[in-house]
Length: 278
Image 1 (cartoon, rainbow, N blue to C red):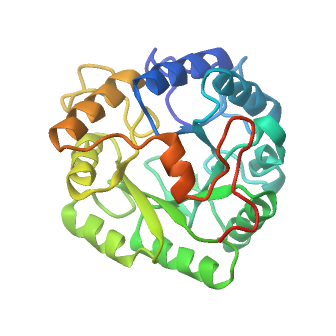
Image 2 (cartoon, rainbow, N blue to C red):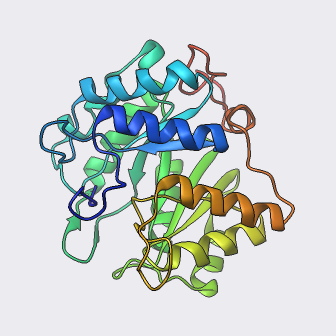
């Protein structure tokens, strides 16, 4: 949502750039991809389903099994019709997952507004479309709100959480915050840990060491080194994760395995959640 070509030349902006960036990391080995569409003319974030469709179509031409999650972010767009438009894609263009931030929060310079009504409306539209929420939790209160949605049967098991640590106004990137949030997850949950900025490598490493998943990429951190002298590419960050995972005796989960545990369709033309399967 934030990096532009002025900030780093390595951020993929056009559909062709995003498609090619995903191809490189797919060939190396990833489980799923979380994509943000940009307007091809301005480079600014866009909610337009036509642009998401172009990106998804291009990715699935070489990766028909890859799990694709689309952004429903409230950082730029505030109307339900805008944020949920991409959920209307169907058939071979249907996303498997959609991001669902579980409360409002402040970043350094901007707010991400997620009212209870908006969160529930997005969750209900995903439920109706058989698209699985990627639950984004920046603090323990957001995990508690996920349990509220579970009690209302707006989201169904199994659950997938991104635990994002190190944002200035949220849970910080340390072992205590990570442990409390993992402890608070509902039963039948799978999770990955992300670190914001300089905390990305540390929190990714912690998650690998304790058996979790990893969220990594330019959305959270554009630098390869802590001194911020080397700009990263997505492929650089993924290669490093493979090295750390190998040192810990862990393999990157295949999309097919992730589809099975999350009760997603098998890919290859069938996408989203297997209907009526709990």
